Image (cartoon, rainbow, N blue to C red; front, side, top):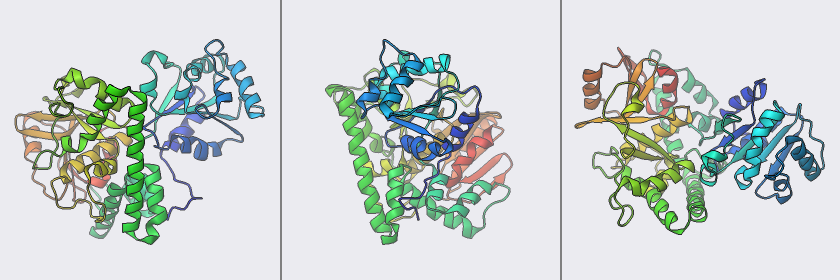
Length: 450
């Protein structure tokens, strides 16, 4: 199992290596929710690819922060100042320069534009949390930087962290035409249950792996403590960075996610309802600010609801009609008070449908699909509707093995999609243009629709 001196591999490493070898690279900015592993990626993983790395924490290191001033953003001047701070020479042709917690120093973010223009090719990589909250759109050096979103670990990364390397390989190998054996499917399904309880936040996975030798109950209790600390930290961020009144509104929207997603007896989530969340507030205008704050902080995924199943799907959206999913399903489970002691994927209960939906939204987002939509017409609803090379692709989500798909039948009859996908507790299979895929393999969808 994962030990303190082992490496937690991330698929974002491949993106970092592509950036390193790109002759037209621009300064790189890593974005993502706090504690998603941005610093670890740069300082512990990516730094291994360079002979020398110069790391500057711009929140904690006031001397490094002072190297960036609005009066002088010339890269040569900045590097001279940083060399003095680090007491090291910086070789811009081969060394990696990491500017961490860059949100604490707006001039540092502005300087990336000038690194791009005046010192192209320099290996400058920055990371920050709450960037969208702290800085306006005008503050970003638009067109002058490369960006990389760092999400919570997806299921495959979780398997690798647990040293379930063969399971991770098989997750990549299986297709609807070549399903797993029932033994393999059952084993991966069990591991997926562990993932949904632990989640994708790096610290939670690290604690789970390091305490699993004490038994699953002890590991889950340790994970629950991590989740509690993470949520407390995010709530503290809300209070610290949004003003007292706004903080109350943002926190109410955040803490309403479990009840919003799970208020239906059939277990499926519906559109976000404004009434009853913030006292005296019931219009979209009242919620636009709090929802935007949570999105910028990376704490929620917003999925617009559309009432047409034709491409481009985005043209049918309305700002005021949407679903909100938590960025991490295990965090959502913690907020809902769902017990972790049973590692089965979905315990009997009303929550199983919307937990599955949130897990799929998380997996799709982590694998590059950041523009998700939900389709509903009359009494029919498809959890996710995706734009693909074959047109609009409906993705229906089931929490178990019930294969009844009334809504998918309605959608297919009306729009005749070239590809339809069903996610559930079953193995891989195909019936014409309808692919049945296990929930744990939702990461395959981006490649299937492109």
